[in-house]
Length: 235
View (cartoon, rainbow, N blue to C red):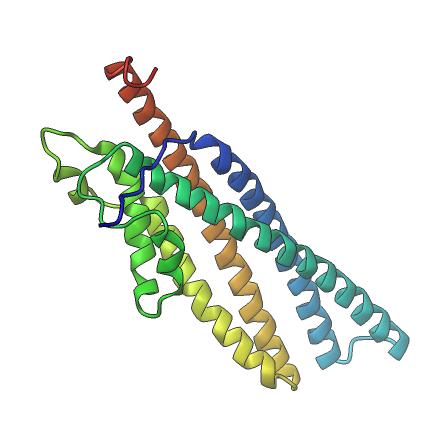
């Protein structure tokens, strides 16, 4: 018979604060990407309306736009990669704390945090349930062990998950259109899709900041409550 893993409580503030800082950087980068895309849309409209005075002016505007887009996009890729690593680490630790506290009726182990995102169909709803469980578990009461499972999800989680799903759809649509965009109309449509996607990502990251900060505070308060109730056990 396999030995059950023993989880230890870790301070939820350590990975959460790093993640929040990175998410704020991502929001700023999304804003920069929105401005870059608006600039590109302006250039495309000027080209379509033949508003440029010369070929040199067209080339200078296009090169400047490309440089800005490449710079912002490159930084976004790097920051997104770091966010993913820190996010997975935070998610595991937050879920592991619930296990360390031996909260009853938890359905998923910490490692399911990242697995939920990669299993087809399952990924449409299980991550949402996973975060809802982490958020509500600190409302656990031994006298009514089932009650915390019935609590609603916080608004920030609902917004985050809605934006996550919309962003996934927009990302696929952007990729498909980008593969065949050649005319001014299709390029303009592509830029509007990119613009919408960046704005959705901004809202998604803002909601995630509230979610991560909220879970951090709730776990901190619950930990202090347990320490006050069982000082010898937590010494």
